[in-house]
Structure formats: structure tokens, C-alpha cells
Length: 148
Image 1 (cartoon, helix red, strand yellow):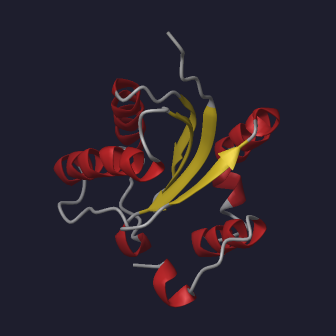
Image 2 (cartoon, helix red, strand yellow):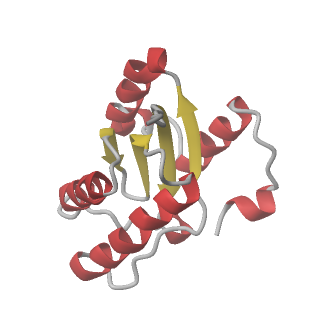
């Protein structure tokens, strides 16, 4: 019987609604562990994750049975509910997300980038970072609709 095989790595970024700094030092490890566990149940392997106060960077695999949109939805909805239980009751993720393919040869570079988020965000805001990614990957966007 033929096999369907794939190995797709993604760098996923999404923020809290209105980029509010809802992810506290207390909820951060719980949220990260919860996302890793949810992902694992879906056949997603997490290589690196970092929850900033207002956004997430997540390096993971994309299972061949899920679209990117389905994968993100299956992570964001339950993790938003979890955060509303353990953190601010009004917690929500933004509606959108960014997902970029990562080649096998760049995995270590992206892992280090994600691990270095605290240092990185001393120099640049999340909004500036997000726009840089859109431009670097040559993604057309309308600034009126980037933020929700």
C-alpha cells in the first residue's frame, strides 16, 4: 500500500487580542505546556515555543492530515479557554495568525530566534517584528486589517 509522507516545519506567530499583555510570568509555563500537549494530541511536534506577554512564537511540525488553518484553530480555541480560566477572564487570541515554512537547514536558527525573544523585544516591538516578517516573506498585506 502506498504511503503519504511529509515533514513540514512551521514558525507560527499569533498575538493576544489587541496585543494586550495578558500572558504573565505565572501563566506562561502553563500556557506553553498546554499548547505542547494539545499539539502532541494532534500529531504536531513542538521544536520550540515562547510565550511573550502579548504573543506566541511556535516552531512546530504540520501534520499531513491538517491544514494550517485547522491546526491553528485547534490550538487557539482551547488555549484561549484555558487562559480565560487561569488568567484574565477577558483573554482572547487575535483572529489572525502568521505561519511561515522553515527549511530543515534553518531549524536551529529559528529555534535560537524564538529562545531569544526577551532580548529581541528589548529592541523591537511585536508590531515592528510582525511587519518585518511579512515583508521578509514578501506577503502582501493591508495594514488596516493586520491588527484586530
